[in-house]
Length: 495
Image (cartoon, rainbow, N blue to C red; front, top):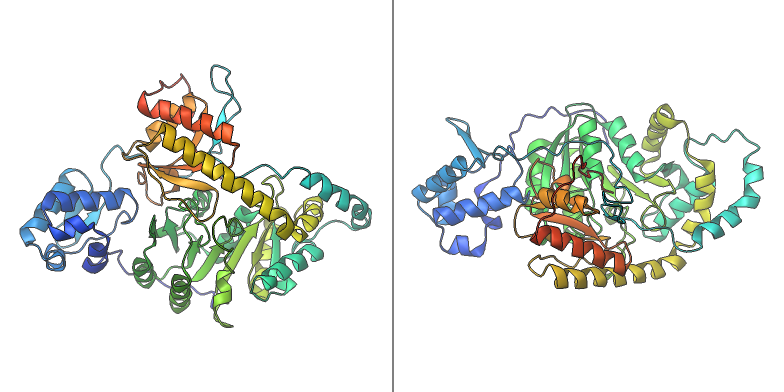
């Protein structure tokens, strides 16, 4: 895999065929200009068509739809009037959002806090993670305690990670179907640091990166902080738009692509094997590094846990794949232990970057992680059973309190991607915050500002009682409106 850069010259466009494939059946059956404009506007707001993308020429789209050019012209005119596209003579028609849709951008980490203004307990639905399983940390600490004196005799600097932990992570990859040697593992302070290290080594400001849309909010912040140009691949309730993915990779020739194929955050979708193979082939053909985030891969609630995506390629067909993961979702986010799996050469270069940032990871955290990782297959079933029960409780609460909202039950993961039916997500998050509920508004997960305003991500990581109370407060804020208290801060941080 070459480390050199490719000059990006191609425009971001969407052809008439992929656009037509995304339109509802009723629009295709009777393509009126208002219904066509409404459908395209919905695709833009839902992130399925990215911003600043050139739409097909009017005659081209008319031919694909079997409609008159006048119909498409009138639809484009309506979209221009409402601020969803702009046109320039000789350059075409480009997607955008009307004034008033505020950018998401990277924000300060604002903690949710434990109480609302009137002193009532707050409910944190912004973080899709659970507390540590009962007794697990105490048992791990008891196992680690007699081993610490021997480790404490050396200086404690292990920039690659403790050798025993590197071996344990490598062995787990091997058992899952991806043969891995310890020298292919770099232990990090969580998956977020792993991603930041990869971006720091492989990308420079202005490089093009492809992500899913929507995607993990903190990964987007890392890309914005690195001043990278982002192109996107839509992920809907039906899954990945793979034709658009292949077209986007071909057009933009990105430096890096970041994906969450296993119980995608926030939609919960699971990428089919056929699409994984297409993604492997497309990224390899473009010379693009493929970063696979496996943070949620073990949270398989209704289907078997998937094998690593890189295991589907014959060697050396996956040398461009970098896999990151952590113990944050299976065990505890407070235990800052994650990893990178890549070629030994790349791991060595990543370790050098890591030394510049924090020298080494916590030895204590890594020692405590050893028995947790070794016992994962024994402890995980109880964790998954708890999540299934909490997912059912959340679904029941939504059906009782907000029957007008809709969602798709994901086969795994930690949250529901809820459709509110109207673009009020940010306003609802503010009202809910005043009522003591901290929630991940849809726009926080969008590559482009202002998209997914009709969505909320609602984790099922709290107890059934807390989930029901949280949904009850959300429903009250949605149906009646809750006035914002003076000085209320908007909760932007989600995990």
